[in-house]
Length: 262
Image (cartoon, rainbow, N blue to C red; front, side):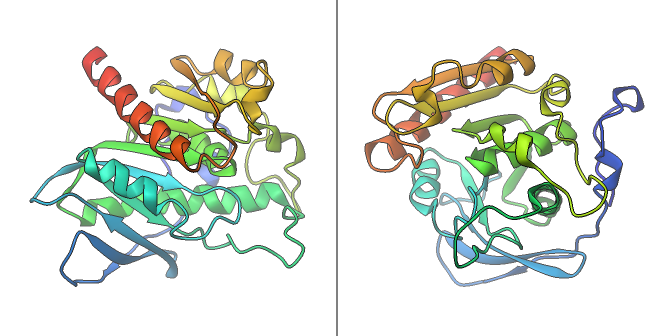
């Protein structure tokens, strides 16, 4: 399946390179509101889980794009909080999201990000296999490096995504995205994001997060055509503790606002 980034006139860079096949996910049929799922891209497994409210649905859906090396389950407390507001939440682990012993960034970060963009696209395509998910109301929650990944996918797949919830996204990484051979994805992110015509919100904090620099996200805020900016007092880059609940509540309020304005 090739990614459809919109009309041919948009000419989104490297969009055509994201080409893969998906197959029916394997799902744990055990009773309860959380089910383990195995998605597939080109026959390779992407391990995840879906948490949903009680009832038949279809439920508005949030797909979580993990930060660098964050394992499956890192965001489960946020998934449960979104679920309490009536959302189904899809968590998964990128195929390449396993840290080296020294926990350094990947040597070829550009190729690494490209693979994660492809995984996220494949997971989004696989949502159609779940009747209780409302595929007309899909939002991506992207944290840190996962926020950068989510921004690529939101731009390439804006026909399929209703909005982007970006939590301290690591846009700086575009400057260090090296490639083993030819580039697999553009590093000129702001002209790309200027073509993202879905609503976006950037969440940041005031304690050990990128938001400590009030100008850190200026380029991104200027690039996205419809971008809100929310600072959560006391939140660190990880958004744990009280900030974990605060960002979920703020995200739900933002989605409600977008729906009222649409």
